[in-house]
Amino acid sequence: MATRILKRAGVSDEICEQLKRHHIESCKDLLSLTPVEVMHAAGMSYQKALVLMQSVSKAVAPPVITALELWKQHSCFSTSLPALDKLLRGGLPYGTITEVTGPSGCGKTQMCLMLSVLATLPKSEGGMDSDVIYIDTESAFSAERLVEIAQSRFPNFFSSKEKVLQMAGRVHLFRELTCQDVLNRLERLEEDIISTGAGLIILDSVASVVRKEFDTTLPGNLIHRSNLLGHEASTLKYLAHQFNIPVVLTNQITTHVGGSEGDSGFVTAALGNTWSHSVNTRLIVQYVDAHQRQILIAKSPVAPFAVLNYTIEKQGICVGGEGSQETLYEGTDPGLQPIRVQTGFNYITRPMD
Image (cartoon, rainbow, N blue to C red; front, side, top):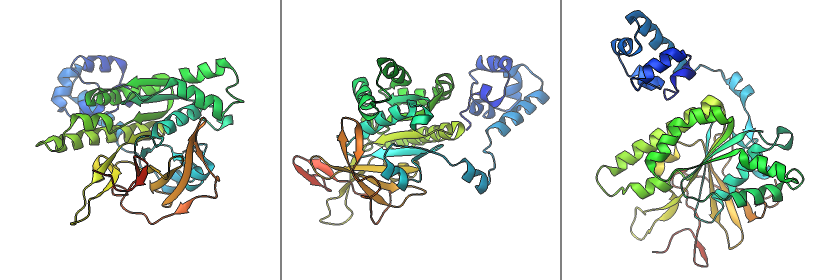
């Protein structure tokens, strides 16, 4: 919460402008200073500087909430997949981070596009009637596919060109292709959410730029990468909580090296076990065969470990036998859950060298 801009913490415009001249823009910037430094930067007395710092400190302190209040506030964003929503007790929970991880071609971006369409729908149609902030780090976003999903999944609602254009205009795309670009965008996202009225944040993908820029075999890179991911996670958690909106991330896969002789390892989610504990809900998508795929609920505060079969159609993700095809499985550490990948025409858990 310390990343909140000062204006959002109740600081007057006049003082904000004065502090901005000294590159003090967030609550963290202010609270990192001494009262004397704040006094000089803001041009106020020592006593007023103390009062200002106390006020800002209270504004960013996490509020105390009872279990009853939390229960009453509980709400979810429907995925439009009844079987998945049923398992997740309503859908993707507001105020939290949901990660979708899996191999290329399994439909992670398709899921993001589908959720983007859903968020723009009126509440009477099961949507949020809100805008979407979509951060694309792989240049995978397709406006044509977004429109196709909208018209195919909701043909009655998107029957006119006007409604299609209105929907597309509510999805705000940011292409950020470096780690610094992503970090800068996330740090400015609070203002973007306020200005656009966004009710959903999508980051597709969190691993892409990180894995390109950080060779973890080099000394110090693993620590720098962990610090960067920690900063991104804390910023997104703050935004999700502060605005009570769902945040959806996609992640890639990696090979987990086996610990014993003869064990060549297995495919699992990228970015390590520490990152897996930064997300609230983890959905794993994996291959079954050339046409069918699976969604695994690998981590959730409310749902059991369950598997749903799905296909990717013109209208997006389609779960077969809504509500009747889910299968429970024995879960494991979400950071070590094996993922089935496609290699040629074979679908295996372990990748071929």
